[in-house]
Amino acid sequence: MANILKTGAQWLSDMRIKHMSETVTYTRGVITVGVLGTRGVTKFEVSDESGLSVYGQIADWIILTADLVLGGILIEPKKGDRIIADDKTFEIVFLSGDGCWRYSDPHQITMRVHTKEVSA
Image (cartoon, rainbow, N blue to C red):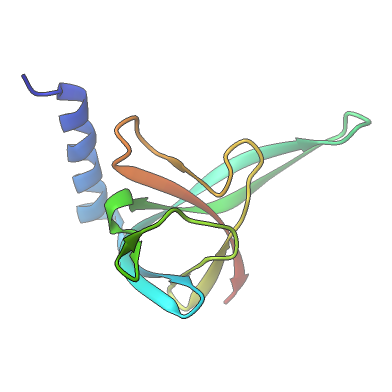
């Protein structure tokens, strides 16, 4: 019997790619790969020792886990890697509680990569 939830997650991923994605360049040093990505946002809160909270948001890129292959090796995003889209450069950052990325679904079909824009 097929896993209906996994089939649904794959269908949603396919629709995201078909209707909401663009080709972006993922880079680590001099190695690059073109992947289909969808821009998103993650909101966060940081509190200091006095209880003052600061709210912010960062740019995310949602990509297929299987597409992140550099030099023939499936990799995980790491701080300092970059994504280039529409002549803008986004650097991967560490987000407290999430790290540099997290899976976007329980079947690990897609990942959400946390970035900040570093140049336009």
